[in-house]
Image 1: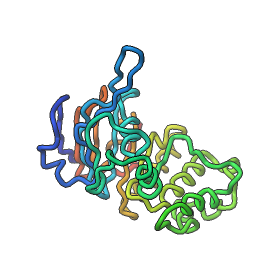
Image 2: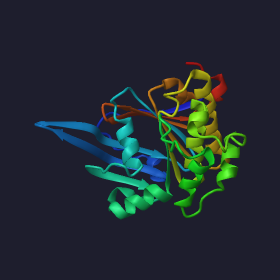
Image 3: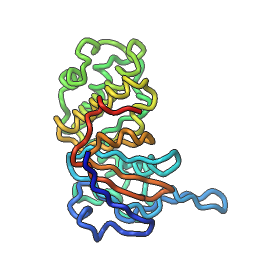
Image 4: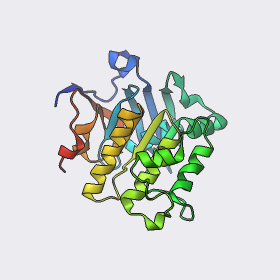
Length: 254
């Protein structure tokens, strides 16, 4: 594998670097502070990075590093304290509640560690619900076929394995036809082999559907399959890597 490394120290701005200028996703000096009594928790502290359209990006760091905070702000589920977030040239960090709702509905697909499926709906119905609220949804049946569940469409979540439920979750996110697919520890509740299968599926979605896929993880081994790796520690970006030759997930061990 060939990595190009961009190491940043806290306080440096990526805004002046060529890496940032043409990014589809761009964080510019983004901060998120929480106040607990007299203490201020700096969940994100001057975060700067860029992600290009169609990239498979892994954001990696230890627990409590600020990864999920970054994902929540990018997904419109949390606001910034200061700084700017751009997606496709639009400053989404300035959106009001109505625009944030539209952004989450139309532009972002979410895949979480726990599948959040509606238990009394079939796999197909879970995907159809998501596609019904979007402007240009993909066909729910075809999307489920695309994730290998053509024989399981009429099954309820309780009748599916963990890996199959996560496939439904991914199909639900894909069917929205979003600009971004955001995945928070998507293999965290799965066994080793099933986890690798899900990662391959996400990578295939990125390549075949030309989607920008961002995966949050604490597992550094997964970074080997990424086009771009962003390292976060103590609420700030401490390094970036561009990988010109990502490894096939089947070859990755952890």
